[in-house]
Image 1 (tube, rainbow, N blue to C red):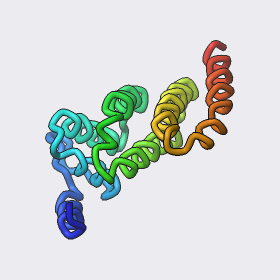
Image 2: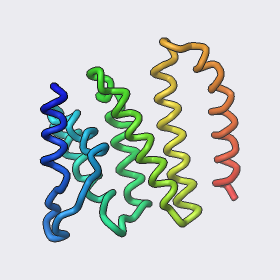
Image 3: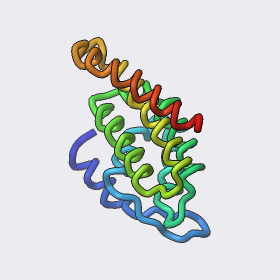
Length: 155
């Protein structure tokens, strides 16, 4: 995919019609994620629907997090299909962080954090063969975070 084509597509797709809700704006960074999967119909469709809901003014985080989990974990290995896979994984992490930051309900926020940790754990497992020393450093962190989160959720 050429840089010119990418820039042209992003500029032309900044505003997406969302049926009865009218037009909503999706940031170029998120559209670049969507653009990576034009050749994967199901993944592209799920991402587009998710991004449209995510950028609605009063989106329900508890519903969004379930969709984000399915997208980020269910389609995880498709993100490595080309040299832009790392960009896709990074954008998904940013979406998790944004969802955590805007959530007011503590139980929902804890659920989002739990899914985010699950996503990060899967991510680190994929880089283990490339950077085994980093993986070893973080293995204790995953155990500790998981244990702390389970304790918090059991209350």
